[in-house]
Length: 290
Image (cartoon, rainbow, N blue to C red; front, side):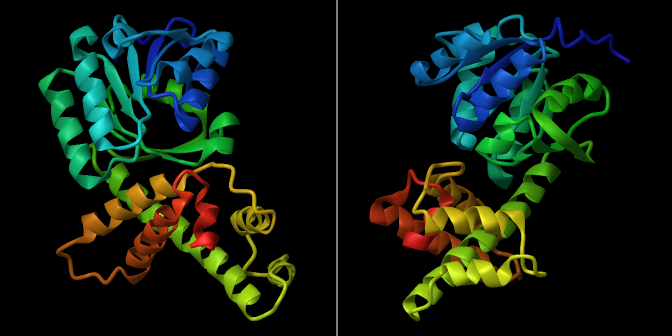
């Protein structure tokens, strides 16, 4: 087994400091990792200076001498661009934890890049949005080789409440993430449409929440999204634009198969309608506005 550095000496480069990436960087710094960050829009990364994170102007500078690279970016294209820009600074044998939701096609491309460049690659998309990320309560869906798992796990323990190891081969985690996202979107759209139906029928939507509360249909997710809709509070935890991107990944992954994905296709159409109406930057609860 490789002799791994401890959290106090491990150098972690976080590429991408959006809602999730910034929270990941902060939680790693709080757990005494040496964290360096890069973001295409540098001002988003610079806010992390107050948290003890060093900020770099280029991805290659951020990853130089890093033990671990963490990518937390919007899509496969953004991850490919960032890791390609970082490549001159990456040493062979570096552990790469890929947390972004990139879909079936892109995860194969990224895994191949890692193999070609001698990197130890972990396909590790996360379940959870802004608040769980800030609280260090993400659920990590991890796939990758056994040999560097202790080092990878030290990062996962700092940013999440649970790690579910799926496979020794990358790709399985990304496929599972698509299935889980399909479930999240069905819950979101179901909540939004139910409240919209009540309103259209002349019923106070708050009565829907009252009727569901405490019964078998109740859940924390329902309560959170329904309450946000009633308050017209669409502060972003997970944006409509990202929902649109991920719903398209689900639909694309199932293209050509025999399975009928009626709900996934409807989710994609509803997110598209919300985005076209100007709600792309709002939380996916803005499905109500579609």
